[in-house]
Image 1 (tube, rainbow, N blue to C red):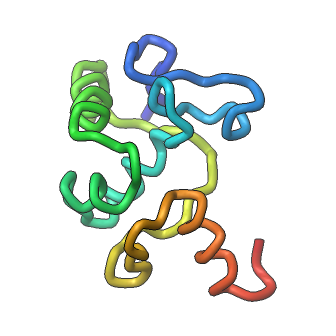
Image 2 (image 1 turned 60 degrees about the vertical axis):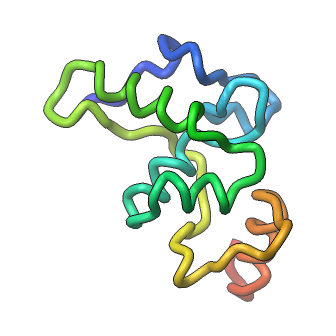
Image 3 (image 1 turned 90 degrees about the vertical axis):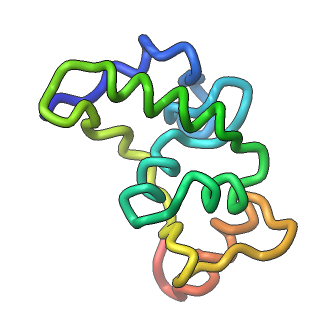
Length: 115
């Protein structure tokens, strides 16, 4: 399956030096890959919005509509090689008022010896 050409999606951007050049939602530091990883792990759109500060339904719907409009067997190919933590709420419940950066830091602290 071919990777999507995210440069054609107006809702996202890739800026050198911003989240290591990963595709993020325009005007944010939120990687698109995080949304797809969460959905693959069974999170709902509402759970994603509640888990990640600044992420909106409009963001998620824009990338899902873009992915669905692309040719291919499922429309969704590899999103990005940017590493993301598990976003399954049953294994990594979000902290009240936490941000993505705090969650990543907490996730790394929970796995001593791994980076």
